[in-house]
Length: 146
Image 1: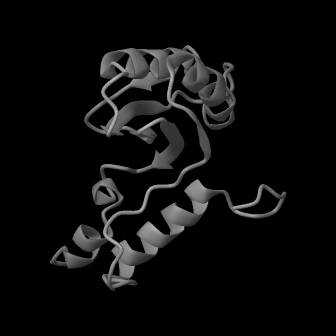
Image 2: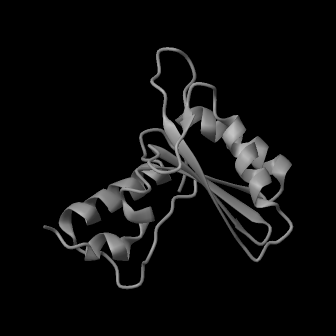
């Protein structure tokens, strides 16, 4: 997606799709299982991830007394990469979030998703990750309404 003013971000677009699927209960695609927004990519190293995630976190987690604290979690997944230590990435990304915001692993307002595939790191910030069943489209549309 191109970054232009007035256009929705990948997070906003995916959140809209997930909310619509949850409200209607209709599956939109035959082959899509899970949708996660990627707001930025970088080389999969601690230094590059720190540099890239800093601006994204500043955008989603404003600092200052006039902003209410946001509960957050860091989700880390790696495929075909064993050179990066999971806890190092989680700690590094969590420390980038300004003071005042709280870690809540059971019910976060926002989740910072860090996906590593081989040597590429993809980062995005999603809202209501647990409530929207981890952005799993198939599970969202198969939930029985009572």
